[in-house]
Length: 418
Image (cartoon, rainbow, N blue to C red; front, side, top):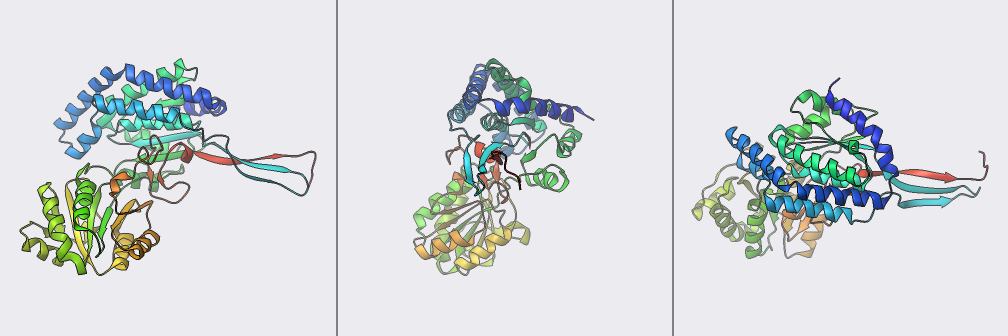
C-alpha cells in the first residue's frame, strides 16, 4: 500500500472530530486558512512560477497554462473566495424533513457531512483552496491529489491551509495532499472503499472517464463541457455577436466555454455573417457543415469542413464547430446527442422557443439570451465550487458546500416497539 491510502486513513481518523465541530469553529478554520494563504502569497506565486516554467518547457498548451497560472490577482481571488465560504450559512445540521408518527415516534431528517471527500484534479491549483474551504464548511475531511503540472503550487497552498486550520484549533490531518505524480496513488484513492466516501475528478475527459470506469468509490462526475450556443431564427444579431464571442473567447480553456454554434437555417444568412466575422477576428478557427461553409465563404471568413467527431469535441481552445439546423426541436436533438450535459444556451426573442429549449435540453445549466460562461460556483453565489456535476445523482451543476452533505434520520421515542 502507498502513501495515498495512508493519508486517506489519516483523514478518516480526523473526520469524526471535524464533523462534530460547531459551525462557528469551522467558519474560523476557513477564515484562518484564508489568512494563511494570504501570508504565504509570495511563496505560492514563486512555487507557481516554477510550475509555469516547467509547463512551458514541456510544451503545455496555452489554455492549460492559463489554468495553471497564479499571480497576485488570482491569489487574492482565492483568499476572497475562501472568505466568502467562511461567512456562508452552515449546510450541516439542517432539518430537511420529518414527521411524527401515530405511535409518537418523532422523525427528523437532517443534513450531515459525507465524511472523507477525495478530489483528483489536473493543472488547477485554485481547486486546492476551493476544495479545502468547501470541505471544511460542510464538515468533511479531504484528500487532494493534484496534477503533476501544478504540484509545487498545490503543495504551497495546501501547507498554508493546514497551518491555518491548526491555528484555529482543528487537526491538520483533515487536509491531506497526496504530493505525488505516481498514477498508483490515484488508483489507491479510487479503490479506498470504507475510507473515502466519495471521489470527485476535476479535469479533462480522459481523467473523468478513468475515474468513472475504474473507481470502486462512488464518483461524482464533473465537467467536460461540449457547450452550445443556438441562434434561433428570431435572435438579435448584435446580441448574438457579443454572446458568441464571450462564450467562446473570454477563457477558451474552461469547461463552460462554448464549443459549438448552431443556427436556425431560416435565419442563417442574416445571423451567421456578423457572428462568424467577429469570431474569426478574435482568432477562432471555424469548422462547419456545408451550409455554414457556404455562408462563411460568401463573406470571406475561413471555415474548414466539420467531421462527425467535431460535433462531440470539447476543444478547450480557440476553435468552434458550426452547424445549421431546421428549427428549435432539431437544435435540441443535436445538443442532446452531442452535448455533455453541462451548459447550453438559446438566443431568441420567442417565448415559445425559449420555453421549449429550457424544457427539452438535458443539461445542468440551460440559458436564454446569456453566455454559458456564467456556469460557475462563485458566480452562482456558492462562494466557490468543488466542481460542476454533469450527472443527476446526487448533485447537478455547480457544487458548493451543500452538495457535500447527505442526510440521516434521527428518530426519538419513548419505548415504542413494532
